[in-house]
Every structure is written in structure tokens, then in C-alpha cells.
Image (cartoon, rainbow, N blue to C red; front, side):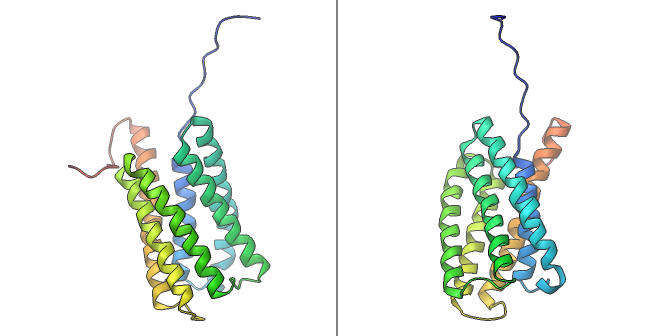
Length: 196
């Protein structure tokens, strides 16, 4: 048995994986909330994304970030991975019909509060990540208020939440793309922070 320490291999940053999975799934469901995409046209794909990319990939990214010692990334990715699995399971069990408006509103409000906490925690990271989480907080708030409007079709507040979710998904994609492209080129091609 040798007393020499073995070199540890670097563990790649899982944030792009988690952000791409989160961004794509959020974008697709948000298009439905904005009433641009009908669930009858793409619901099966959205729910498959929720399980495998939004849910599964983010759970893996969360575990990966725990290994790297990134508490915010680990907690956020694992939480949002669980969120997408909850959405998939609830809609699967209800035959595609969500919980009561009141239940759904409280569910989204809870996620808005959790996301606001992540937003505050992200203030010492990059502007791109903070903006993504800020828009996600607003998305959840508008989805909660929209559910309280008691509409059967997407209400005006739900549609606003949908459009905020589209922005959120695009911001997540940008943040992930910047990480991958900047790392691959070993220099900043896509900025993650606003110029001061």
C-alpha cells in the first residue's frame, strides 16, 4: 500500500447540463402556458422532457454539484429536478388535468418563495444566473396568481407567467451556452456579467 496520494481528476461543471435541461423544459411548458403551444399538440413531449431532461438531468447535475461542493447549484438543480418530476407525476395521475386552481396556486407560490431564496443566494455568482432565477421567481408568481383567477383556459396572468417562463428558459439556455462556449474556447466569448 503506497503512501503517495493519487491525483484527483477534475470534475466538469454540471451547471450547463442542469441549465439546458431546465431551460428546454421550462421553455416548452411556458409556451403552453402562454397559449402558443396546445398541450394536445405537444403534451407528451413536454411530459417526456419533464421526466428525462428537466427532471433526470437536473437531478444528476444536482448530485454532481454536491460532489463539487457547490451548495447553491446542488440544492437548486436537485430541487428543480424534483419539481419537474412532480409536474410529470401529478399530470400523469390526473390524466393531464392539474390539481385544483387553489392547490396549484399554493404550489406555485411555494416555488416562487424557494426561487426567491435561490435568487438572493445567487447575487454573488453571475448576472446571467441571477437574472434567470429572478425571471423564474416572477414566472412562478404569475402562475400562482393566474391559478387563483379560476380560469379553465389560460388566464391573462397565466399567459404573462408563460411569457416570463419563455424569457426564463432562454436566459437559462444563454447561461448554459456561455459556460460551454467560454470553457471550450478558454476565454469569454459570451459574457455572464453585465459590464460595470
